[in-house]
Image 1 (cartoon, rainbow, N blue to C red):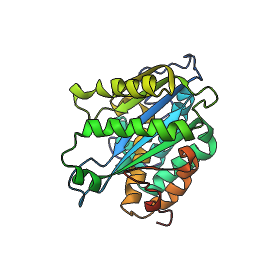
Image 2 (tube, one colour):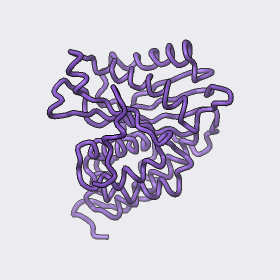
Image 3 (cartoon, rainbow, N blue to C red):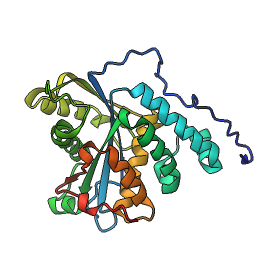
Length: 271
């Protein structure tokens, strides 16, 4: 592979490991890990930015899924010098900096080879609704959308939710911290605990929420890729449809959670 000047792209699958990953960690299969990122923004100016997308990656084996995603990401970095430069300099590649055909190479392997390890949750929020409601506090809206998704789609559709016993042992959220103010970081954990651990439980023990830099967590990066693909599809950007068709195989219940209504009808696989 041709190298760009000043950049060495001799990446290995073990490069850019999460800071706290330990191959010897025991995995509790009663626990569900949820990696979250978003694309777009919540805004009253819906004429310019109509949709806000949240992606949730669910898994019970975060170590194995993490290793698989990093390995596929490194393959892209080796194949495409521009992406390799980003990964080398920034420790991550943003979904918005990739083409959909580039993502397709990664998605295809992740779905076909590792699809049993994860499911995808997609929330689409219509900013036209936000404009009609007056000023919205983004953090509260984000928290509400997560709570609504977990209480409905996760509970009823996700194959990692133990419907026989109607609970998970623990639910661990890891969320990109970019757009969250420091004084708002404690709200989501308390909010979800009140709704999903106390009043309408889906979790037996605890719900924990950790905000972190996506550079330090590969699966938050995975959520970023997928959120960006759905965001592009809602904007009818060419070549996103092929990826939507592929990713839909791993959607919880093969459904999209739209707010304030179902946005499945807006998704196109023909682009």
